[in-house]
Image 1: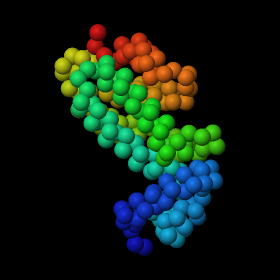
Image 2: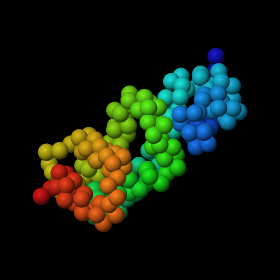
Image 3: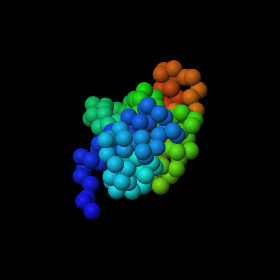
Image 4: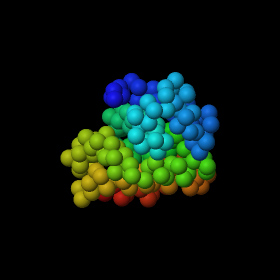
Length: 193
């Protein structure tokens, strides 16, 4: 049996992203994805052994890479840890809400599918986020602008949970209201006094 190339896998993920957008996550089948990729179902199953759940996760992780590239650029520009926390969080919320790829996963009918796909992937996703922010985190600790008693993994998890809750439980705050909230409740947990 021939091994699947990276190009074939990317083609399948592209097709999955397209189908999730066209049919919705709940209604997309592996057959839909195979047809969109112009591949046989067998090729899709060989390439993506975890089926739809693996495809959902692959689409989300690819979008996460795009966001983390953008976040890394922002962190290089930010001069203050509090502003990096506040503006990075706002950027993450806006990115998720406006990214069409992610928006398909935030509708109610996708919730069960998303939960199943992401349940076993929390650790790799958090690890990926940590890999991106670790250099900035370590530099801030050397400069004594972050609390010395916290670690990058715990901080990324904390921010991930904050961002997720702010996306899911929108309280109709404008950007300035959200900035005030973050400066009051989140920044003091992470930044050095």
